[in-house]
Image (cartoon, rainbow, N blue to C red; front, side, top):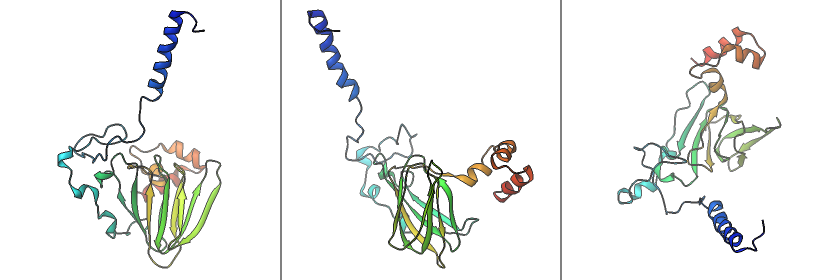
Length: 219
């Protein structure tokens, strides 16, 4: 419509005033210095409610979680120590987190994905085969040693395999304060309630006895 008549002109002005208001109604960045998570409260959209400012202390902004060695005695020979909003409340709303990953010789950080974040990592000790698969089913991989880095685009399935003779240590970081993780083998064969065998036999083109054998490996 044209805006030549007084009534139409008024209507056009109202539309022009409302458009930027609707487009810019949300600010994607935090509007405060910090929002230390109140873990006693239920999480809201994209984070926890803020702890009252008067209850915040210096300890809320520091963590020694990644300084502690963990046990890799399990079926995969691997362990992950997370520093996300659930273990480090000061990360709340900041969109960052880290993991300490330790992998025994021959151990595997099994194929998994992070639905809410891209990942970058640096190898501190050891030698690792790091790989991921794209949505076009292309496999990218490389053997990395201490000081070398990798990046995994958001949501793609990836793994790290210790191909060295010593325990491997790496630190990974994410652009989310709670990146989430979907571990492929446990998701498929150890879910609760379980995925029907009919689905798994058809997906993997094997018999039910094979599926039951795999499920038994995961308790």
